[in-house]
Every structure is written in C-alpha cells, then in structure tokens.
Image (cartoon, rainbow, N blue to C red; front, side, top):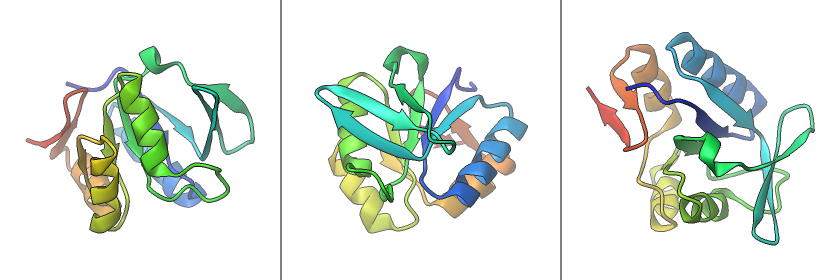
Length: 136
C-alpha cells in the first residue's frame, strides 16, 4: 500500500530534495518541510522557501521526521510527540540509531537510517504506509 500523503520533516535541503525525488519516483506523494514550531497547540511548518503552513493532520497518513531541525525552536522528538497526539504515525529518520531511539521514546512507531530509507524505497523493499515502515 502506498501512502496517500507522507509528511516529510527534514532540515537538510539536499537530503530533503533527494528524498522527495525518490519518494515521488516510487509513487509516494510527500509534502516536505524544513522547520517547525509550536504555537499554542498548533504545529506550524515551514517549507524550503520560507512559507509557513499550519499542520492539518488529517492530510497525512504517515510522517517521516528527522531528529535535528536546524533553525527550528523545536526538534524531532517534540514534533513527533505533537504529531502522535494528533493521530499521525511517525517514523524517525535520523542518521544515528540513538537519535531514532529518542524519537521512538517520544512516540515514533520506529526508526530507520536515512541511507536505509533511500535504498529501501528505491529498491521497493520498504512499504511506506500508515501502519509502519515494513520490509517486503
């Protein structure tokens, strides 16, 4: 099953563009943001061009969230906790296992390194859906 729409929160422009391309090439729809902030109980996301959007959780079936969000007042664990409270399943996509573990403790359903995510999606070995990132 391919996700209806993935939320990608990744601060690195090069990695974000590459991951967005890979997801698109493999039939996934994704919306990408580079920064996040909480305003009261609302998650405000910023895209690479600086445009801000208020999160509409019902638009996303799964979120892929990086741990470090440079330039953001919140980081991946805070974003993860908020998304989970709003009913959006999260997969941590940090390059470091210990950072993914922190995000799992914040509510992420699992974690995967970025290199494994890239290669798994490209080889169609990973299924991205609302339940988890699973290996075929």
